[in-house]
Image (tube, rainbow, N blue to C red; front, side, top):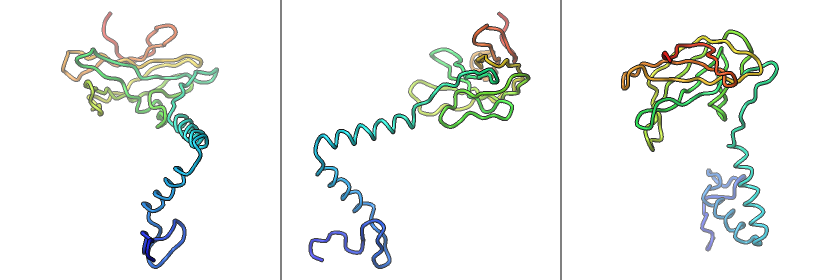
Length: 178
C-alpha cells in the first residue's frame, strides 16, 4: 500500500469497500495518459474535441419552406436603453433551447407570446420588462421579425408588431404611427 495515494478508492467501475472510484483519481490518470501521448496524437485529439464541441453549440438558422414560415426575434431601443424581443411561443410552438431566437410555424392565423427583454451594457442577464400576446398572419415561405418600441421612454409599455421580412408589410400587432 505504500505509494498508493488512492487508499480506499479504486479505479472507476471497480468497487472496493464502501466507496467507488474517486473522480480526482480518474482525472489524474486521464491527465497522465494525455501527457504520455505523442504530440501529433495530442493535436489530433484536441482538434476533434474542439470541433465536436463547436458543432454542439453552433446554431443553425431556420429557413422557411413551402409549408412553413419562420418567426424571428428582433432588437428594440437604443444604446442607452434597449434589448431584444424573446419568443416565448407562437401558436403553441416554442423555440428550441439551441436556437431560442426563431421558430417555424405553419401558414395562417398565429398567436404569439413575446417577452420584451432589457439588456444593459455588459450585464449577463436581461430582465423581462413586459410579456405581450400578439395575433398575426403568416404565409408559408416567408420570414417574419418581431419588433418592439417603447411608447414613452422608461414607461415599460411597448408597441409590439410582426413584420414580413421580405415585403416589409405588417403581419399583425400594434405598431407606432409612422
